[in-house]
Length: 125
Ligand SMILES: [Zn+2]
Image (cartoon, rainbow, N blue to C red):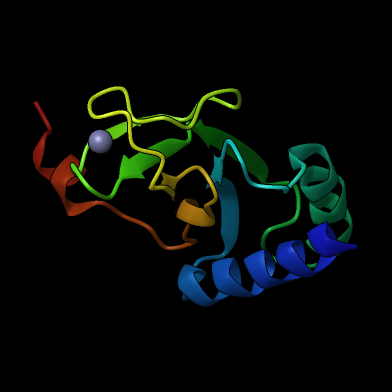
């Protein structure tokens, strides 16, 4: 169920950003390694809820972001390891997660009906 509300929000956001576009073709999403979002579920919901919108048939691209920890005493950022939270530099355990829990819409690709790039016209041989 969580994915459904997330996906609905995603569609609102994409439609909002699409402006006067006639079609949304691609969406680029970022998912942290520790995020509980399941991309397959998002994909499934997406196909259902984007139907009859300008985002129908668009592709979802997921980019996984590795998790990172920050050692608060010495400020070192290091890769998250499920078995060992200890700072490799100072041995402290006062660490917090600074990356890996995110889920957001990075960018969208759109098509506009009357898109006529002026650049192309000048390139006549
Ligand atoms: Zn440290």
